[in-house]
Amino acid sequence: MTPEHPTAFISYARESAQQNERVLEFAQSLRGSGIDCMIDQFADPVDWVQWMEEQIRKRQWIMVVATETYLRRANNDEPPDVGLGASWEYADIRNILYGSRRGDPKIVPIVFRAEDKAYIPDALRGRSYYDVSNDATRHRLVLKLAGLPITVEPAPLGELPRPKAAVALLRAAPFPRTPRPDAAALRERDAPALRT
Image (cartoon, rainbow, N blue to C red; front, side):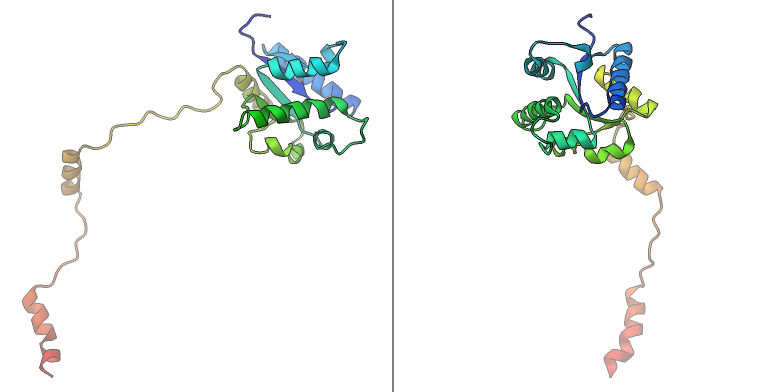
């Protein structure tokens, strides 16, 4: 792997064989797009806690796959022996967010189904999330991870009018003027009221 390849880690809940396969396919597609993406399915460490901490601390990007199960594990709403990996990872992610004051921009929520955006953990809710079931959004995520622009450049600003040019424009553009009655006509109109 060359140094210019961005690095990423995917934190997710191992909730079903289908979900594990979906995450594996997504990670492989990112790798095929030049992103050095790591998931637990690629590893067999002696110490899982150390491995998870290293991935979260050393990788440039951390993607969090939001699902109902992940949210339960992130909130410690599972039995003590269930979902330890996702719970540990999210605790580490939350510590990174807390320590960075404004939230670390390297942490990106993703969903595989649009309805799963409701399960983005609270600490990540204000962030842009990516629905990677959509090819266009998946492409935007790859661009983001690669450090490439994902937005359209605004047109350059033109020059403001100069004071003399502004006066000339005002003179050239006739404004509708309300005719002012002359003073004699006003006196004539108001004279009967004044005499009584």
